[in-house]
Length: 314
Ligand SMILES: NC(=O)C1=CN([C@@H]2O[C@H](COP(=O)(O)OP(=O)(O)OC[C@H]3O[C@@H](n4cnc5c(N)ncnc54)[C@H](OP(=O)(O)O)[C@@H]3O)[C@@H](O)[C@H]2O)C=CC1
Ligand SMILES: CC(=O)N[C@@H](CCC(=O)OP(=O)(O)O)C(=O)O
Image 1: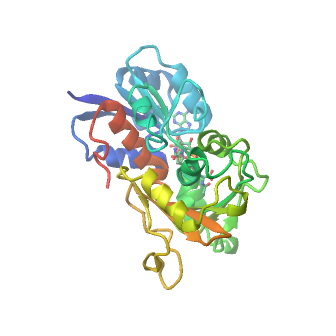
Image 2 (image 1 turned 60 degrees about the vertical axis):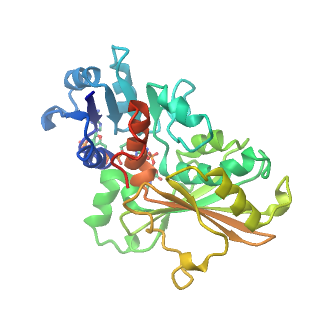
Image 3 (image 1 turned 90 degrees about the horizontal axis):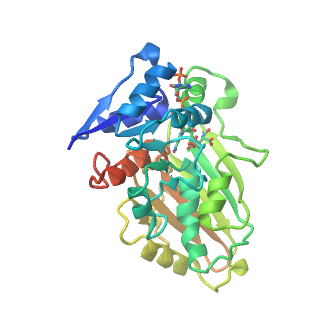
């Protein structure tokens, strides 16, 4: 069986990369829109309703509009925007979340692709809450270091076409403490309040390290950093895209420094547990355009269409 696929937003950062992945997958036919018609309501509506599966790689408002264009029961939607990530009728496209999530995605025709920072945060902290190690009302904090491609065409152009001195140094942002990923970070991690989250964008293309400092004295169970690593390793034992790095493994550092680009061009997430009995630092590392965006979108498509989950992915 051949499935027809349409990417609405095909010329954007996420859309272009999804096209790259799709070009390597068989059993699909990609429907394209003429470039000058890519924002034409009727032209988009026709293709959205013709396709078996549509990727929405658009701003939130255009995603909502695209969903309102649906007039059939066949088309499955995978939305990359923030518009539906906590919507009760949509499935959250993080198959590794728990034992039921993969099947939820498989049986759903509306799936949202998680935000990049949210992916790293939830994968690292959720199992510790689910297993009763960290209480749901834990006052969590999180910071993330990310490449500028996460900001889409506009931020890429700013970094690549400007020599402004202030772009050379890392730049903290979302300093009103209201980053758009907070609702999904809270909901799917199982926390009763959102983390205090401060992302930092750097002058490099891609690579994300989401860091979560933790104080075991505030935990429900008395555990060491080594035991936290063991718990996470057991939780993700059967997951092909999530690797929990052995505790205390200097081999993964480069002369003592962390390389946050090491998962680039893969769909992998590496989770590290650093620290000792009094302080722990969890770090999730991944490609913000891979498992943080387009790779995750393709992984979800594979599940929704019944393909092997790693089809087209590295
Ligand atoms: N789920 C994830 O992990 C990630 C999701 N995203 C999300 O994906 C979406 C796209 O992000 P990104 O690719 O980085 O953004 P870009 O700005 O790079 O691309 C967005 C594209 O959408 C097009 N567009 C805007 N409005 C319309 C419209 N009404 N109809 C058709 N096309 C339209 C733009 O056109 P034009 O070329 O004319 O500007 C552009 O090509 C955003 O919602 C973003 O939040 C982003 C990164 C990761
Ligand atoms: C550098 C930068 O701006 N990054 C984006 C992350 C993009 C992403 O993954 O998420 P969305 O799908 O929610 O857009 C940000 O922090 O908003």
